[in-house]
Figure 1 (cartoon, rainbow, N blue to C red):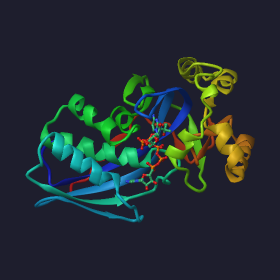
Figure 2: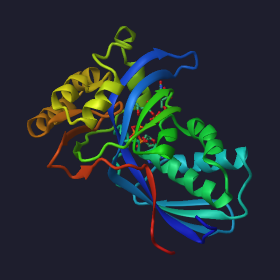
Figure 3: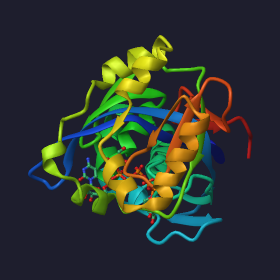
Length: 274
Ligand SMILES: C[C@](O)(CO)[C@H](O)COP(=O)(O)OP(=O)(O)OC[C@H]1O[C@@H](n2ccc(N)nc2=O)[C@H](O)[C@@H]1O
Ligand SMILES: Nc1ncnc2c1ncn2[C@@H]1O[C@H](COP(=O)(O)OP(=O)(O)OP(=O)(O)O)[C@@H](O)[C@H]1O
C-alpha cells in the first residue's frame, strides 16, 4: 500500500480447531501443536498519522494495550517512523477468550507499519513472536498448522464453507491455564492436526469429530460450570464444538447455521480513503 494518511484495518479473530501441548520449554513457555483458523469476527483499527508517538482510543477500557508494546518493540528493532499514529480501536473480539484478539490487533499494527516503512514480512515475523505467541499466525492468516511457542507457521490452503457460533463467558488467564495443565497429558491427542485438516477439506464429519481436540478443554470445563454448559448448548446445534485456545470461548461449527464463517485471512485493509 502506498504511503498514506491512514487506513482502516480489520483484525480478525481465530479459533483453534486442534490444540495439543507437546512439552514445557526451558524458557517457561510450552511447545504447542495446533490447527488455527481465522473467522469473520473482527476488531477495527482506524489509523491516522500524527506528528509523533502513539495515541490509542478504544471503546473498551484496556490496561497496557498490546499496541503500545508493539509500537515500542517496532521502534527499538527498526527505527522510529518520521510519523506518529492515532489509532481508534473498535473492539468486538471478546478478551481473554482464546480468540486471539490482542495478538490480532498487534499483527494489524505490524502489518500497517511494515507497509508504510517498506519492511519485508520476514523481518516483521522476527519481532512478532516477541510481542505475543499468537501474533505470528495473524501475519499469515487463514488456516495454518502452528508449532513451537506459536512462531512456527505452516500455512495451508484455506478451509472454506463452514459457519461458526461462539459463546464466551468470564475471561481466563492464558498463563494460569498453562500452569494448570497436567504434563502427563502432553502429546496425548487421539489424532494429528494434519488428519483433522484433511477431514475438514473432505467434509468428513465422523473424522472431524474423532480428531477435534483441545488439551485445555477437560480442565477448563471441569473448573468452570458455565463454560461446560455453553459447550453442551453448542453440541445440540452444531456438528462439532470445542473450546478455543485456553478459553473461555467455545465454538460450534456447522455447514448452514452460524453468526461467523471461516475466512482466508487474518488482517485486511478496508477500502476506504481517510
Ligand atoms: C493458548 C493459545 O492462545 C493457543 O492459540 C496460545 O498458546 C496463547 O497465546 P498468547 O495468548 O499470545 O500467549 P502470550 O500472551 O504470548 O503468553 C501468555 C502466557 O501464556 C503462557 N504460554 C503462552 C504460549 C505458549 N506457547 N506457552 C505458554 O506457556 C506463558 O505463561 C505466557 O506468559
Ligand atoms: N488490544 C488488545 N485487545 C485485547 N486484549 C488486550 C489488548 N491489549 C492488551 N490486552 C490484554 O491481553 C489479555 C489477553 O487478551 P486477548 O484477547 O489477546 O486474549 P485471548 O483471546 O485469550 O488471546 P489468545 O487466544 O491469543 O490467548 C487481555 O486480558 C487484555 O488485558
